[in-house]
Length: 79
Image (cartoon, rainbow, N blue to C red; front, side, top):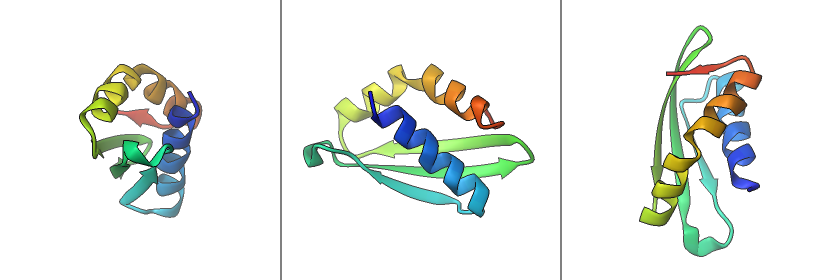
């Protein structure tokens, strides 16, 4: 539940600061890391998200709509 907003915040921070990649460390630690690479063109964002574990990759896939919504609330459209 807290992870989706954390990923959105990391992506927003990246866009604001012109950073192309960020790493989010999940808790509990056995869930591993999520790396996020962003490409920004105006208000359009292309994101590549990689997760250490298959379970987290599946979870991120199920959260895509929430991630898109969170970014849209920040004025960013995820392609």
